[in-house]
Length: 392
Image (cartoon, rainbow, N blue to C red; front, top):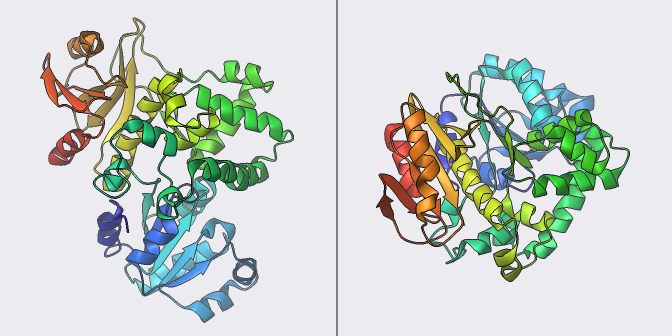
C-alpha cells in the first residue's frame, strides 16, 4: 500500500471540523484514501443510481437510514444533501462526522460555499506524487518512465498498462463527464481541443490561437478550459506580477495535472519515442511543476506557485512564494548542467526582491551549487520541499 502524503493533514483537520471534503480528478485515489482514514464510517457511493435516487427523493429518510459518520462519495450528484449536512453539522457538532468527495470541483465548490462555509476542511487530492512512489517497488531510475506512465493509482496498484489506461480514461471520464456538463455539439472538436492543450504545455495561453486551430471562438476555448481546470485535468499556472512597474507577462501558462495523460495525448507510446520527442522538455517541466503543486496541496503549507516572465523574456519556470520570500526555479530536462541554464536566474535575482534561494532542477542525478544556485536532480525535489517545510 502506498501511503498518501495528505493523510496526516486530513486526520488532523478531522479532529477540528465536522465536515471533511476531498476533491480531485476521477481515479486519483479519493475513495481509497478516505475509506482507509475513516474505516468506521459508513460508505455510500452516490454514483449508485438507487442510492442517488433515494437521497434525492427522500433526503430525510436517507439520513434516517444511514445516520451519521458517513462517507458520501461523488456527493455533487445530490446537491439536496448539503443543507441537511449543514443542519447536522451545526446541531451535532461532531468532528469528522461527514466525509464528502467529488470529482467535479465547480459543482462541489458552489455547494460548499453556499452551505458549508466555516464547517468544512477542504482538500484536493491529485494522482500519486513521485515522492509517494520514491523508494517503493514502483520507483524507476529515469524520469522518462514517469513522463510516460504518469501517476494515476490504477497504473500502479492494479498494474494497468498506460496504453490501456489512458484511452479508457479519456473515453469514460473526460469525454463522458465533460460532454455532459458542457453539452458539446461536436465531440471531435472537443477531442482536438484537449489534444491542443497537450501541445501547449508550458506555453502562455493564447485563447484566440487555440480557437483558430480547432475552429471555435476564444470564448468557447475559455469555457472549455475552465471546465478542464475545475475537473483537475489541467492546471493553470499564474504569472507573478505583484508590485512591479516593468512589463510583465499577464497570461497564465498551461499544464496537465498528470503528465502521463499529456504524453498519451501527444501520441508517445514508449520511452524511446519520449527521448526524441520535441515536447520532452515541456513534459519534464510539467512533471516538476505538478510535483511542486502536489506538495502544496498535500501539506497545505501556504506556499503559492507562479512563473515569472518580463518583456525582455527574462523568465523563471516557477516562482515559489511563501510569506515575503520568493524562490525562483529553472527546469531543464538535460542530464548535463550547462552554464547557460543560470542566465535567467542570475538576472532575476537582480530584478526581483526578497529572493532567498534559487534552484535549477535538471534531469541528472547529482546535487551541486553553481553561481549561488542550488542544482537539484529530478528525483531530489525533497531538497526544495524540505526548505519550504522548514520555513512554513
